[in-house]
Image 1 (tube, rainbow, N blue to C red):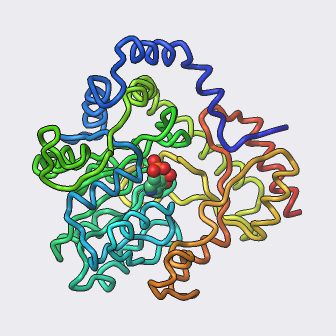
Image 2 (spheres, rainbow, N blue to C red):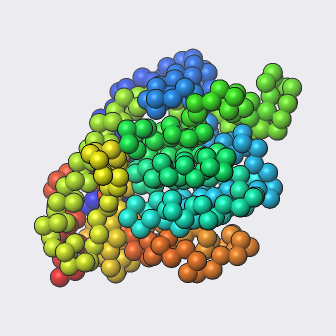
Length: 377
Ligand SMILES: Cc1ncc(COP(=O)(O)O)c(C=O)c1O
């Protein structure tokens, strides 16, 4: 049996006609940059996220960058984030010649540990970027509480988590800014790069709009230095089709995660301490956490050998992320050493993400769990 990590061809087959029509409409209009399709997508994403404003941009990375620019982050400023995330969360901080400051993660959720946030704040700290990793929100209440105590704005990196909820609030809608990525492998993926920033504050939205078009409020008159952060109409047209299906796809991912949880419980691997299945946190008073499983990420022993074995058995997996950001070569001047952020380092050595895409069948999941059990026999 062959099981890919993600099967975008299967998804496309189910919506091909709608996508083709939407793409044809854009070609017929010959309106390729921003325009009515982008406006419509912005309105739909704002509605979906239960927030006032949304701004379509060129990628999730640019969504983070433009948010930091809108906050006026300058050289020498510090921005606090997590070391266990995709590179761009911290890369954008360095691109503004500011300094990323890393706070270790909660080992259960892989998200920023709110208890470690306050001690990382200095007089130079200007913002905080928690990441909602793998489809599950970071513990936002304590993060927002500490941040507001110090007057720090927060950017939610919800690149992997559109549609996730934290205590009935939508991912991205809880802070000054929320950021989404439409990279094709995301739960809502375009046909290329794309991203979105959401905010509830009109002054911040106004700033974002200007920054998106080289800082010009009227064409060729530049008030500030911005960039080309525009979203294409083609991406917006594709995403408008896919947005209608997003919740049903995320529901299927949740069902697949639940089936894995049951199969792994039956396998005895959890009891034997060999694997740990993902934790859905903040369930203390009812179902207040809605994980959308952009990834189904296990912790396991002998991770690299297991990955190799699964590959031989036709099962594709991925390691998100093999090296935490504080130990990346490009950040060596920040002065972090091995052992500084132990939970992120342990996670990097033990995580493996299994296929969890909506079209995955029960038989494929049974096959994967059977192979993992066989490996640990
Ligand atoms: C957590 C996180 N932040 C930011 C990004 C950047 O998004 P993009 O690839 O659209 O630039 C990604 C996506 O890859 C991501 O996973």
